[in-house]
Image (cartoon, rainbow, N blue to C red):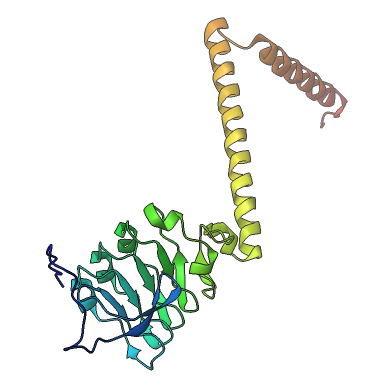
Length: 232
């Protein structure tokens, strides 16, 4: 949780003349350590049969440089507590059964140079910013539910809608524009006519047209009365 370093000579794990050795994967590459420094801050629990969710206690290991939990049966979401590992340089959670979205808290890991979340069941947009802008497709492959940079799959919501719904949506967006345009033209024409009536006193051309039709209708009625015979 808190590695104390001093200016003394390096110390290695072991007792007496015997010193431990092991093989670890650091930033995606396999290394064989003939001797293990006591200040070595890496956890490699890969290729076991561990199940369940990632414990939040990992978020308290503030001196941790590397964490490899790949090739297990881990389930549930990625623990947000991993965002507290500000000294973390590589994180491998690949080949598990992890679900949910990638926590935005991981963006704060500015020292992270290697990330592998492939072959899980993660969904949603990939976080943006800092080191996340440098990771390639191999960090996320095998998660068909993920979208956004650097993947070619866009997170545009409209592209995930059914085609029939998209057609209705396009018609609606076009239709309301036509309605608004027609309404605007009608209002403008009405205001123009109102201004003309107010200024001239009356629309003479309309009155003349109406009076002409009324006079013509009156002449027809008078003519009809003359034709009808009177009763004795």
